[in-house]
Length: 382
Image 1 (cartoon, rainbow, N blue to C red):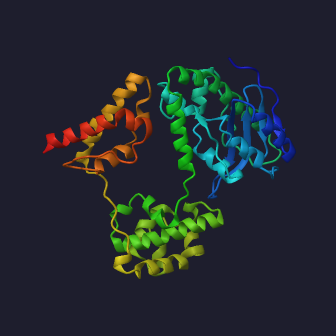
Image 2 (cartoon, one colour; image 1 turned 90 degrees about the horizontal axis):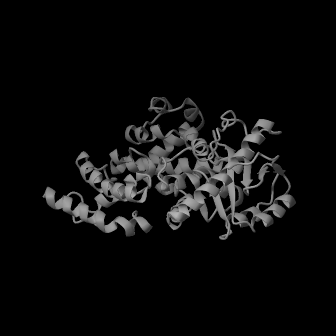
């Protein structure tokens, strides 16, 4: 099944990268992986890019490459499938590094779930199960920005590229035989599209988990704080929580401290934040508090009541039945946010309608059935 690991080629010059990109453009697929550091920065810092073609592994040094245009052309070439595993952060690395994300995309984690293996299966376990190879764990948290890289780091990184290509060689034919290729590629395309969405600073407050508890006047303060936090984090390339921790945001909006000492007493408020940004935060709170009532955000929807769990369970069973029939992981079928979006269209009395969140093959496969279950549930509860 697998071949011995050959010595990987390190690519650290623009001309060499362009030459190999021209070669990879002619292949049916390439396997891609990244090693990066992201401890205190807003954007991930690429330490290494791995490419596998099924026969060889290549290691691209992003600290030395300046011209990423040939690589971006490879990423967007529609005739070359890009193979990755659980790639949400990899997509961000590629977008920030060269302004492009891979498409079409074959995610081996999604493929495993489509074939009835565990949902969200880790890379090491998938390699163990499919290729019968136990991967080393020592380098998973090593410093990928150090130079020179150690021999152990190089071996580890090259192995990832080769084994990822070998996984594709096994999984892709199985997906094709099951008639699931189009569905998988559609899911991966949705993942790519989502990765391209950039958070609007003005709506960043909508992502705060407890924001639904706040009154409109408090939401105005939260909105101002979150907009500043989002903009500053990007401009400074600083992690959001290092600038201002999320757990502090709702207490700030509710308690509205008016001094540095009061600010210091806010839940989870780091002393560094008070020292560096305390006066700015106090002014932002005052700015939000001055907003006229008619300009304040409306209250956010509350979480669905516990009574709605029965309907969620009934609709989830629809997805489970289809998953069992198709031999797929049940979690692939219906995400909770999709079910909740459907319920919100008519809860509790109905009638219900299909939400925009239910798309593609899932809408075609289960849409009518989910609507029938929801509306029948409403009639029975009336």
